[in-house]
Image: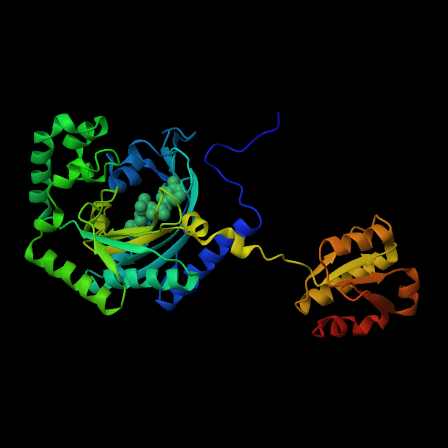
Length: 416
Ligand code: HAM
């Protein structure tokens, strides 16, 4: 038996790979227009980082982390990153930016790992393009992040629905949590087994239950508990979204699965991916920098599920074949050396060249040139070399001409 890939892990090939790159490249270009700059952080971090930020009771930390002990003396517990936010916050604090220059705007792009049950749009290794903004406690920043996501989805030609909510802050959320706990205890016999577990450990998560969807309709809503400041903040977010022409719905059940959120949370939902419909998700996390040992600096951000967006875009759109301009055929060793020089000249002139194997006959190589869809076959043998020329065969029109080596680049570069 051959060695196969792991369950939930993907090889992304051809048009699918191109779709993923297009999502990443477009997100990068849009982020740069919002004056957001790249940060690169490790794939491996200490487990505590996620326990203290994403939350010990979150599914991500409790059930889904790829965690293992290092071979050092301390058996340091490590984890493959399940999300980017904690690592970016750690890096921000470690670089001393929370003190020296707290207002920072970062984006990151790369693989994340979660040991989830694989299905369409849900993988164990997937890619996120994330944005994290520090030092901006204002509602305008939350709104701008959603406007940015809207810009991106428009550029990609994707329809989404924005769902938003406010979870309140340290002042008003305790009352909401207490109300949920009370509601949960009163309804405990109707709730699923997971919810029994959630109830005492993290009652907010009751609203997130995928089984008790109908039952939690009657549960308390965070928006009914907001203090004056949080209500105002949420009001401004909505006004600015409406002003920018970004439609949204308020979903009071949107508590998100990670522990660090306060005030604004949001998701962009696509109808084109099946049940894994959240293609972008994020929110505000004003206490997180402090929780991880930094100063009291506000934070807000989001992450795009790159594969989910690529799936929603239908890879078919990207099935354009990448064909070379020139298939270079060298017959004999001396010709091969000259051909390699010629290939370099052509490539420096931005011409796509595939040097064919020198170990096959001319006929087979011409068939190969045809198969890979090359526009020209450029043939260089001992005779041509002696005369300082090459045969340029136009495979589209089946015409052939002999041209001096010095003129090959300009002959091929001519628009066909
Ligand atoms: P999240 O909701 O866990 O949030 O993930 C963000 C997005 O990543 C999801 O909406 C989804 O599109 C994608 N995603 C998550 N898990 C998978 C999976 N197993 N397979 C494929 N795609 C997946 C976060 O990760 C937060 N760090 C977002 C954030 C940034 N909040 C503030 N800043």
